[in-house]
Image (cartoon, rainbow, N blue to C red; front, top):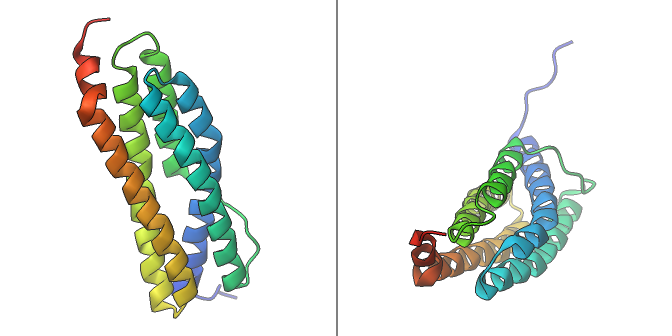
Length: 167
């Protein structure tokens, strides 16, 4: 017997599980990035985003509840790869003036992935008539955009310039 075709709702749940896993991995990685950072403002940005990420995970759990599905992640290869690249930056640039610029670049790769995923989830939620879920995604999307803008500001305000100096 052939399996039934996947629906838009199936895609929504798959994407939801994917970002749930990603956020949990990000939550585990942010303290390591904060510890590795040299500049206080970079450390603070990562610590602040860690607190926001906890709230984002809670919102995702609310969406799972709205969808009538248990909150469970599924391995997100994209975030695994992005985090792995971030670990390489921490190792390769540990004693470098360019470390903070590299950490910011790694964090922005994460933010851009999250913005893409949350934008998609918001659109799918709207299409599926899940207005409450769409509002929750919108809150998170606004936080991700704010974090990305802050990271750009920190990079342009000094981290990138400092990274130009020879160690």
